[in-house]
Length: 345
Image (tube, rainbow, N blue to C red; front, side, top):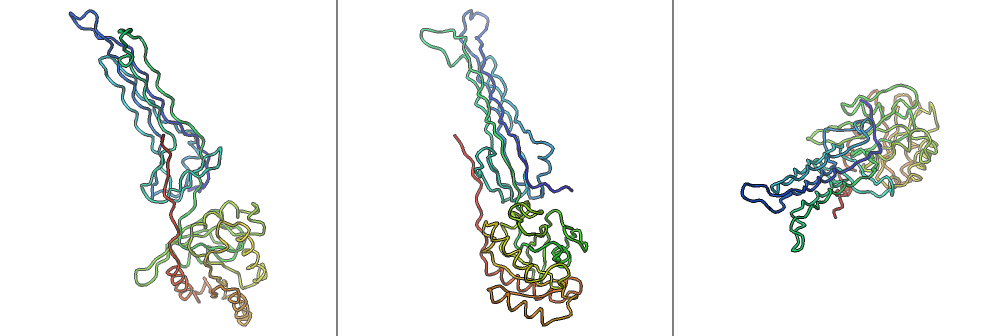
């Protein structure tokens, strides 16, 4: 399935129905008074969180969404039918912004949470409302009010406990496939991962957490280089980061690789640089000089980070790393949830 995490969408509430001009017509009542009914209200456009969705793909092919208009009023004071709301399903973690101002309208994270993004117009009044002592047979009625309309931007930020960061080919996808049932594409070259992946990690004692893998970060990723800027937002919600560094030195010097990613996290902002982080040395099975691993770990720990070395191929160090991650998660409080907000007149 194609992964889409940002779309621009046009939404319009339904127009209100037209009020009716009508007069009472009955036998033996030659001059019945006005009895035109009101128009019905137009439908609202509502965003609602569906936990079964994981992408904004539907909106890519349906960028225009309009609710139905209300029914017109009829004689005998019959009110037009109110139009039903147009409910648009979005995945958990969807941030809703006004496309013109950039204002965040809501952060939709809880299943069933909803937001009215465009209200339907009020129905027009029928001529029964325009009777005056000097005007007993009014031929006036209101048109229904137009529904609200606007362009909005939907941005998806994955909801996960742990985020994997590192340079391309640092072993993130391999690690995720080792510790969970997720099966991201794995190959021995950079940028194998082109979209984020989620996996559920299960530990003994009925413990579990969700891990997210994003495309590799390269230098100047915060400025849009590579794929970093597109996907760094997916780890904003995570409570803990696992910073993966290739210890084999096959592509980059481990210390330079560590510093590059650290600098990009700090430059991106959004609180990523201050998140609790565990530095994980990967590809331990390819390292012959274990003293170099110890030396690297000491330099990392001197900066205040926990360190562990693993091999996703042989499984060495995987268990202790997961337990270390669980302990850190246990110490970190849940991130604050921003409740959905919507504006009403």
